[in-house]
Image 1: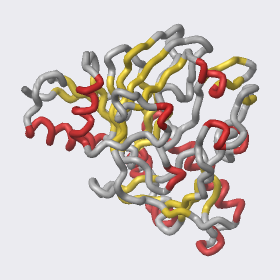
Image 2 (image 1 turned 60 degrees about the horizontal axis):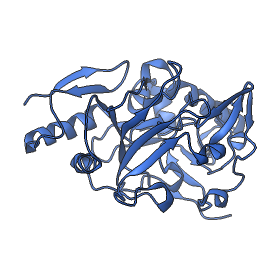
Image 3 (image 1 turned 45 degrees about the vertical axis):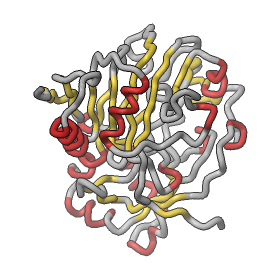
Length: 316
């Protein structure tokens, strides 16, 4: 068995040449894990597998983490987080963009970023895919290590000193660095975390440049969702206005085409990403979103994050 590795558009690779249903040697498992750390985003196509096989395959990359909300997991397979569109929960994820009703649009983010201890990664498998328009329901991935590498030396030297703060919010219109052009919340948009069973998280701060705990790659730790401010910018020669402009610049920088890949789903596709390095727009909550009533089912397994990359700020 020999793996075939094909570059995707801009970032990540497609890996083929093996069948997940067949026993995988220790050598193949080690190669898969090495590819994950090298490229951050791996795509596997046409994998006809059971939930048990998805769970088994995911454990190659580390221990699995159960989702904290019991209602979103499978009773039979607690390691699976079942993402679904086209059901009663759509009303909580519906908003309007320039007058068009869209379900499940969510901005670029890193999972559990607001906790200071993000999970290590996740694997998505498309179970049911119904595509009405070519752009519907795509999932975006962005390589924040490549985004860091592209910065000039003076900028790298400056941001090595800085921390950024993420502040959890349920209302998209209260997020400072997302694009709100033409946005209106839906009538059932939650206004506080407890509306959908979430805790109210304290703010979390991260170094603006995080060193990946395993690969050692430098990662530009700036993503638009929940991004709030630079910590004490004046100590580093920046005014508040300059720090805001710096964050605006980086939010635009990490979204450049050369750092991003958008996956067009078909049934049997699987995508694995390294959440310590890559931002994403989740399969059911992505930048494109879907039209109301479109059925989509994605099985997700989550790889545990056993390292705290940021710090929780004390309640003021």
